[in-house]
Length: 163
Image (cartoon, rainbow, N blue to C red; front, side):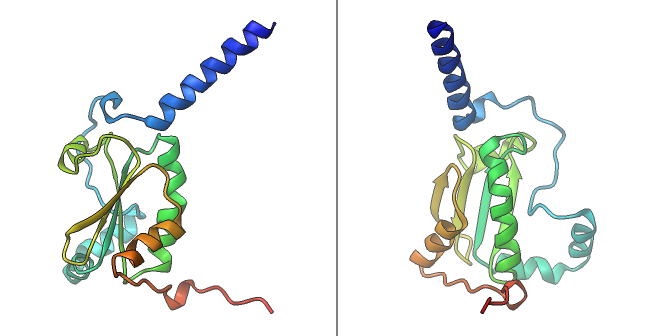
């Protein structure tokens, strides 16, 4: 009985270790090319495509690029973090996600070996930091702050204080 439990524990640990590392080399065959960028509803994407000025503004903002996959566990954990950052720092920070299993050229372009990988860019588009794995929102803000990029929550996202 004990040996069966030990075997099961070893198997579960091995599966967990493989899932955490999620190497790019084990990615499935590439799907048809999909436009990459921030995860947003189709209506929002259609509206922003009509406004070329919106793209110009986004290029001037500091950027957080998260490279991962929609089926990766740690990548799924990053989704609410990225969504919060988009909402709370709207107009100050450009937050994007690229699914490298759908766009495999991105993994070589950004030299990604493990997912999720977060790449930090300044407003001029120069990379200044990189992180691999799950990264909490507070640590992301600290990384920008450490490199002189001060982000303040937008007025819309501030929650009323409880008295």
